[in-house]
Structures are given as structure tokens and as C-alpha cells.
Image (cartoon, rainbow, N blue to C red; front, side, top):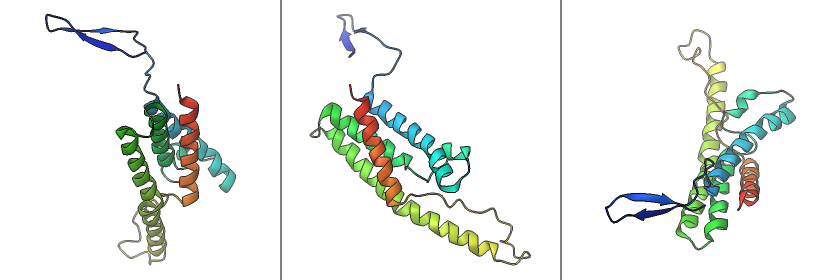
Length: 164
């Protein structure tokens, strides 16, 4: 379903080939599907772990599996399957995936732990303290290495199943 752009002698261009209403960019579709599936699964993993339904998990970061890891891994694997491992696009996607997964399990995880500690400190302040009424910081920011790995596995599976 590749489209070919042809330049006419008068300088105008036309499109030949079949046009589709459904996008055929498999790496992009794989990434979006992996993200959506990871976010959807967070509702169930939260229920399993905490025995409560929390629909807010559909739009929040943090939790099992990592949607960031699923997204970038699906993108990298889909590009690798489509263009092979020697392509520059695959190299860029792999580097991006490594940076995102490192950030998710490193910087963002530690920022979340710091937020948790700061929230605990604020709760222990006397009510008359000016900071005691501050809204709590979000502490579910990053991912454990297991959550990052689960997201990466999910991304690989989605990309493999989406291959053309």
C-alpha cells in the first residue's frame, strides 16, 4: 500500500497507488496500541495488588506495566522488524527506548520516592504550620525495574503481533 508521488511535466504532483482510511504505519500503530494496552492493564494490576478498582490508572503514570516502556519498546521492535536492525531508524529507536526506560526506573522512580517522603513530613507538621495545608505531591511517578521489564515485554509482544 505504498503511495508513489509522480511529478508531472507541468510541475504539479499526483498520487498513484491505493489510499486507505486506516493508517499503515505499523511502528506507530504498535507504539499506540502498546501504550493503550499497558494503561488498560494497570486497572487490573491495581485491582490485583490493592483489591480495589481505580479507573484513574487509565490516565496516570506509574504502576504495572510501564506504558512508557511498552510504547518505546514496541516502536523499536516494530522498526527493527520492518527495516531490519542495521537501519538508522532502528538505532534511534533503540537509543530512545534505553533513555526512556532508564529514566522511568531511575530519575522518575526516585522523584516519586522523594515525593512520598515529603508528603509524610508535611503530614507530621502541626496544623498551624504554613505548609501543612499544601496539596500532597504525586508519588506514583516512576517504575520499578520489574514494571519497566513487564512493559518492555508487552511492547515486544505487541510489535511482533502487529508485524505485516
